[in-house]
Length: 343
Image 1 (spheres, rainbow, N blue to C red):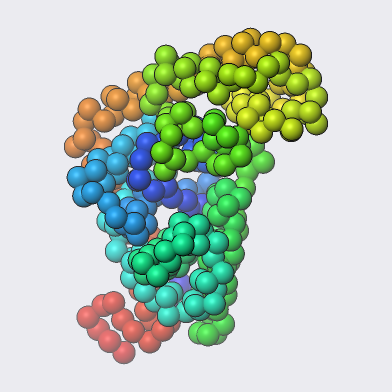
Image 2 (image 1 turned 30 degrees about the vertical axis):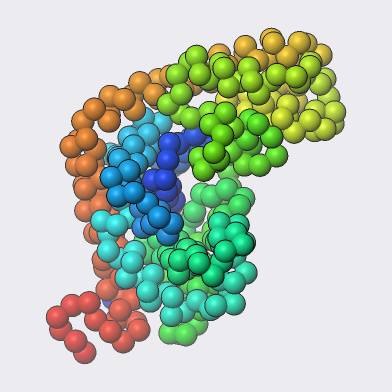
């Protein structure tokens, strides 16, 4: 067994294949993943096991897996620089999940806010998988002895749970085997809200397509959605304090600032006091310039599904080469064995 106290820095994160990637995913996470790929060892995963915690249509799920992979690559992730794969193709995730389910407590899971949000009032009918989803997320991270996990603020609680589980494992078995992963919330990660309300997070599950900009929206549709979002806003406020009183306007200004990689105050200074139409055109132009090349590359990648499958399969081989020895050690620590020899 390798030195259990030695933990090399490694970044891991994942995204569910449950629909088209939207602007919130891009500005809030993926653009930062692209920047990270030149800074150290990175593993990014299409978490299809997470997706089936709620009902999925099999053919749609297969399509979504490829679409998410194509979108990630089109956004700039380089499979030669990072490990990109499908979660279900690396069995170590599910195996470690079961072991960690025996470490985590019901009390910890009962406190997880996202289960309550996703299950709603009908929690008794929710799947066990949805309830234990955070433990699988911990397994995703700990399978690779991950040290850093780029997440949004809404996922911080899940990383805290992964730390708690790692700490309990280490305590029970008197080891320092698992590192305590750190949540990484980049300062320039944008929290993008719904274009309709400006008060709820932009989501692919929102029934109203006008609430989000999808990465594959064509230029005319992007312009239409921004025009609709700006309708009735009047002029853009010249102060950040006043801007904060209008969630829709503040959200749009923050989107512009994130795209331009500028401070919100600078955007307010540029557009404050001017007619909304000027800001509307500028924001739509920014979005089209940023997203059109991504959309074109996405379509090119998706035209060769076999090539995408090969990329994901090669990534899974690389992931297994890291995960399997770690899981072998876990089995040894808990008194079991994955290999034919026992004892």
